[in-house]
Image (tube, rainbow, N blue to C red; front, side, top):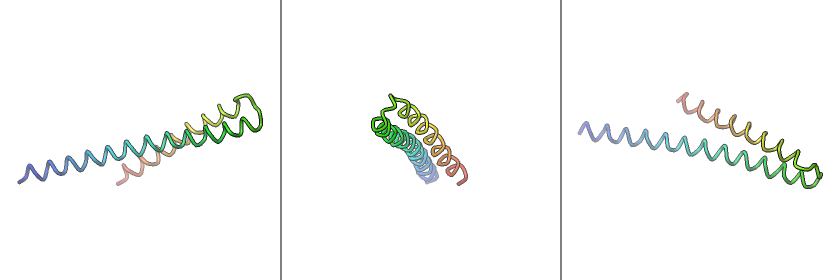
Length: 78
């Protein structure tokens, strides 16, 4: 009986961590892609030869890290 409760607790905790990893990954990728494609569009419209695409990619990476950091911080606070 005790082993079933421990196993259930371990499975629940494992699923929680898998969920967190998935959320962090998706948050980072989606943030990066949104900034990349937005600045790629602006780059083509303003004909800046890739400068805006590079800036958008960097902004996407930074915003992805920041959003991921906030997710992890909120998870740790629980």
